[in-house]
Image (cartoon, rainbow, N blue to C red; front, side, top):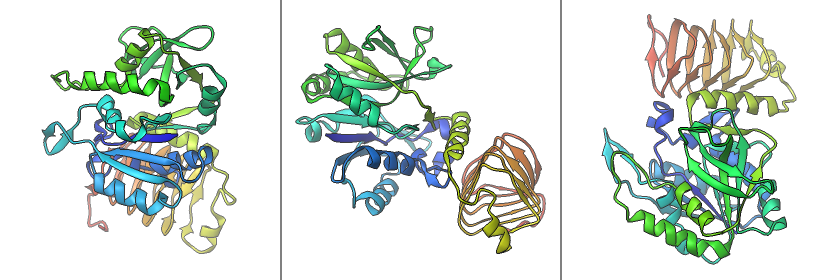
Length: 362
């Protein structure tokens, strides 16, 4: 079985964080999002599995990192999806459908498992594999009940969990079963899948539209291919928007099983001084905290300093310096400096600088 991950996009909904890195490189609970996903894939697929990334935006950053950290387990392949053009120096691409089409020559003789880089299932990927092998079907799609189906591809399923209709971001409520970031297509369906993707790719695009995967799947259903919905019982974490990123942070922190949840070892070494840690909190390497209250639900990166702050429900990147900050529900990018600020819902990108005095700067 081939694994395919389309990871070319800019991640506009997560700007300004994605100005300097791909969205899959956001660090949550001590790991990059792509690390969380690939760890679950390692738990579900054997060593030596073929894994192809469709890269574009920040392709060198992605390729070098993945080769360094995962080439010992997966057989890695990289295919570039070239941008259609640029807007304010940021590339834009023709969509998920065209990204998947690029993998045609690699995967056409085998089953193909496609996963998205901004969705993380807490229960890993075993259940979709089990559903595929135990059912008489041509493919399986992970689905999950959601409260806001207008943000997702949505499926209608029958009483046997086969998908009868699928539509991308419907304006009217047809179902609350959302596609949850993973598709498994058997090799018998792949020839027709790629044929339809090829046909779609030749349709001119206008007004920022993209060639999606969802309408092609709908065509497959109308051609009587049997696609089954694999309903996930645990949460599917969506890291595609800032508000869902913070929700995902809470879930990942709740799953952590730290031996030292209040970081007594950092208190004993004086790296945490005159401060209170309210679990769950993740604190990275080389972090100094003084005269502060941190938590609950805070992810803190590496190489940073926090002084006289009260922070909860937030994600803080690497290399940050914070002094006299009171905030909650905030996302603070890498290598940022903030001082003298009382404000919830702070959302700032990497290397930002907000201060009213001569604060330390990195």
